Length: 432
Ligand code: LLP
Image (cartoon, rainbow, N blue to C red; front, side, top):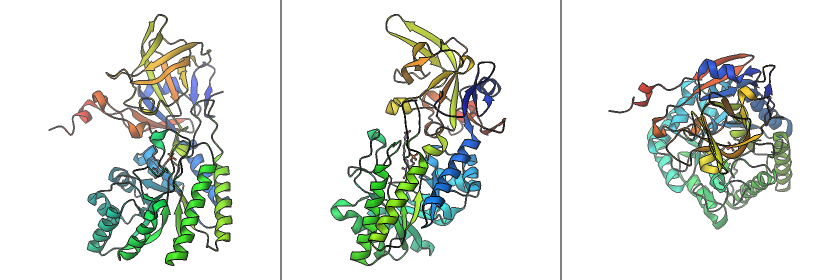
């Protein structure tokens, strides 16, 4: 009935999330409120791990892409579930290390990592630094040399794949700010450069073709291209690239019309392709890393708001105003992203109205959805927006000096705050 199977309606007609009454959560912790389902997060992590173990015999690591949702607690959970993590800034790295995340299971990404960031990554001894440019290779080698260290690296490659998703979140195409292009020989040149730098240990290659992708084919194609590259490097330069990081990008269900492929099928098909090609090219099986972000936390999150106003412009549109908006969820403003909306206190009623959900910022584009189906809204109702666990809290901003909401984790019928709501003093804490 709903987009995610942890949503239901209780005897009071209230929306439940992981068996918790969402109106009670809103009452207890206030709104706006991010709520995350810990069991679903753990279950998703386990599914990725077991599909890797079941279908691939060459060894591998599931690295949770923490840009999707980053706070201390998610690194604790990923650590407990035996995952690695992908980080893309010193902030994510620092947060992970603040809970003693095993550094050797961290992949450090970014198309313009600073000297400060690379230096800290070396000090912590992260597992892999994913080098993105020639300048970075030189800088990293110099920093490693100064510290008397060797930096284990992957090279980020752009395989020339255009996955079917929003153009803002496509990353595998040739016209991209990321990585070394395989076509034109740039990637091979990067291999030569890395091999010539004494303080770099070239362990393998990486690609990430985009996000919110429903088909399996582009992932298989990307894996084939990387295997082809690995074989070419062995044949022409005599060097064995051992690790292949295939990135993340697996789509989730935001609205009933979305039909993402099952993640087990992804791992099965990619494994088959890799095993077949490796055999054909007489390569030993590479160690595979995958980096799911959205697919681990997306459906495991929901955001609760309070309705503060309902305005009907006759014959034009009905606006429902909420106490959050683009500051806690910029995805509609950025990508016109779709969501499922439910009035949590009227969840058993029909959605017989069509409304535009407006945020509270001084900006007409501050919407969460345009002309979406909803129950009849009144001031004081609790609005639930589903599948907001990924790229909502992590992309929240302070625009209009709006404070960031709290994040509450629910599990086994209990709830706890994992990120507290910001205070007014937090808001001015950096101001001189
Ligand atoms: N690995 C790398 C190198 C990435 O750049 C990303 C996402 C991932 C893994 C994880 O992708 P996922 O499994 O979450 O699709 N803000 C956008 C999404 C941007 C994704 C950026 N990179 C959104 O809200 O849709």
